[in-house]
Structure formats: C-alpha cells, structure tokens
Length: 341
Image 1 (cartoon, helix red, strand yellow):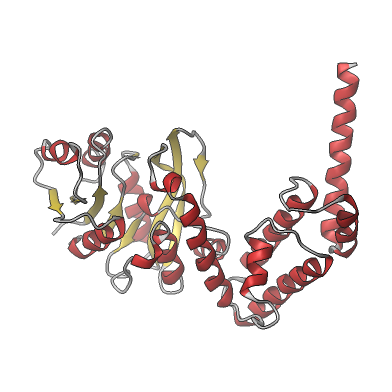
Image 2 (cartoon, rainbow, N blue to C red):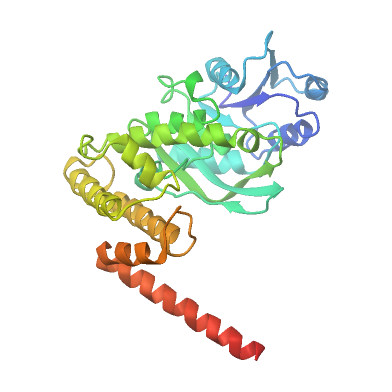
C-alpha cells in the first residue's frame, strides 16, 4: 500500500500533462501512487498519460463526462495511501513538495491538511500567499478560499467523512474547507512548493461569475456560525454591504459598523473563530469598505456630500486612516507637480 495517493483529475490537458506527471515522478519522496481520472478527454491527454511506463500510475477512464467534482470524489474514494496529495493536470510541483508537506503531517498529527504558497506562471507571475496556522486559515475563510486544494496534502482518514458537493460547482474546494475546518486542522507552509499555470481556458477564468455567486453563499453560511442577530442584519443587507457596489445610505453605513461590532462581541463569547483572528478579518472588512468609498470609488452614486456624511459616522480609527492617506496623496501630488515644473 502506498504512503501517498496523488489524485490527478484530467480533461483535455495534452499540452501540459507530461510536465505535471514528471513533476510527481521526480519527487524526493517516491512512495506514492498516481491516480489519473480522465473525464472523457477529446484530445490526446490519455495517450500522453499512457506513454509513461511506470507501474505507480493508475488510470481511471470515466465512461461519461461528469465534471471535476465527480472526478475528485472518485479519486478520493479510490485512494489507498495514508495521505492524499492533490494536483491539477496543467500545474507543476516543486520536487520536494511531498517531502516537506509529509514532514508537517507526520510531525504534527493535529494537522490534517498541509498546503503551501503558489507561484503563478503563464498569464500571471504573482505569488499566492496563504496564512500559516489553522486559526488564521479558519478566519480567512470569511474572506475567501485560504487553501489551494490542488497544492495540498491531506490525511485520508481525517477527511473520509467529507466529499465534494456537486451543488457547489466551481467553488467545491472552498466549500470543502468551509465544512471541514471545525474538525480538521489546516496548515500552509510559507514557501512556494507548487507552480500554478494561469491561462484563459481554466475554470476560474471561464466561470468567474458563477464562482463569485457560489462564494457569497459559502461566506454567508460561515458568518451565520457566529450567531449574530439575523433578523436585524439580513442576508440581503450583508450582500449589499459586502458583495455589491450598490449605492448605500448613511443608515446602511451605521448599520454595517453595528454588525461588525456585534459579530466581534458575539464571537468573543462563543469562540467560533479565534478572537484575534476574527478581529483581523473585521479590520480588513472595514478597510475595504473605506477604500471602496473614499479611494477606489467602487460604490455607485457616492458623491462628495455623501462621503462627508459617511466620514462623520465612521469610527475614529477609520477617520484617521482616511485623513492620513488623503494628506499623503496630496503631498505626493504636490511633489510631482514641483518635479514636472
């Protein structure tokens, strides 16, 4: 029985799959199986996979195209290793990725999933950096997906109770972490161990709007865990304040900061999320709110007089931030004018 099962769903990745598999076969840890689940590719993906003469590669050819979620559930159920390492068919592993993630999972048995940072290549060159410790990762779920599933190694036994929800298409990984985060501790190694290919044909590009709508539902369900007054602060109100660029009133602004105070206060008692970590999230929400109104103009219909009124009802810390940043921008503009004469 292998130590690690690599779950590798593929669909029409003939151009990239050779590099992906090679980056597994050359790992510094060699005790693994590779489960390739082909979702009825119409190109030469299967031919490329079959050209590798390695007994550790196991190919599952699905009789019907049923999508990524079906492939993931099939791969996880077929896995025989103590640990499952995920990857995608168009990405590349750093050659000691398995070794480093395995060390965390074996030395810290409380950790059930170990991720890492990702280096984007192709259409983007940014580094995707995730928080390290579980309490930080758990709280970051309120803002977005804090673990890249494709670059993660998991304890197979710990996640037996969890599958990928077919109703959460294009956000199945985010939903997976959101449901399991209270039973399974997570950790992200603070270095790049995975190269993430970015291109126009990937799911996150093609189905961006669907993914955003799925994300909103997941975020709201996580906020619900805190136990604030949902009668006073409805989902419709939170969608307006957190996930839209709709015009808002002074009353909306007051109500939003009241909600932030309430979730901070209730969570401190209930300890659904770490107290310090939730306060960090609250500060990020406040900062985004301020930027959308006073700096990026992302909100519809917010004019000068409205901004003045909103400024008047903001907490002192947010007022101070706005004033300081505005002054800094003004000084920078004056200096540029002096330089250009």
